[in-house]
Length: 280
Image 1: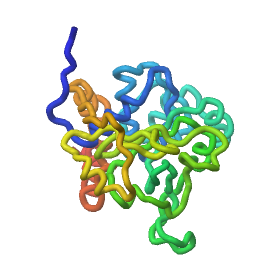
Image 2: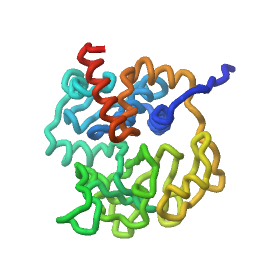
Image 3: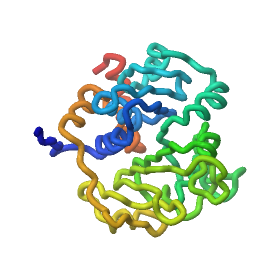
Image 4: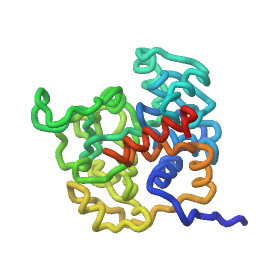
């Protein structure tokens, strides 16, 4: 029996994409939102390993694909326009595809509370005078009211994101007012993995990423953590998973942009665009 060879050098972005890939089952319909390269890298990795029959749908081209292409900045639409089996208008996606097929999708919240309710609209106490206006919720406000396949990811775990009380609720979690569907099933951050199996659907820490302590996760979370009784270390990526991510799935490393900010992010954007245009 062949023994799994785990990678001895991997980065946090690779670990997050691997965790996402491991949540995908063969044959599923999986949806990508806008500007989510960590998720797309995980989806493609799943397709190349244990889930060859997944179908991709995307808000970018509002299309359904069986094939795939590496993430791109200057050609982001190419996969969805060139490889589409069928293209939908937004109205058909919202009223037919999503309610009927209930696809699995990973959302990135700007704020998330202990029960998986999320905010992607604004930060502050006044909607009309926010401290920070966020990109918006897209279809999250619709999908999370009836869907049962919502998954979450947070590239930079902090008390700014994990809050006791949201400034605004734009995505429905495990909420007493829910009539259909269910709240999120899973969340992965750069510190660990979580489910929502605590009391009343409360978020619960189930694994710690290698080198991360429980104390560190609690210090960076704005509410008391529920902890699974069998808390253990997140299994690291395999050597094959790391090789595929670096050489096949995302050779430009676009997934890393989600962990960067400020000058480091701007510099990497310039480098990727230069490589895509043949300048490097």
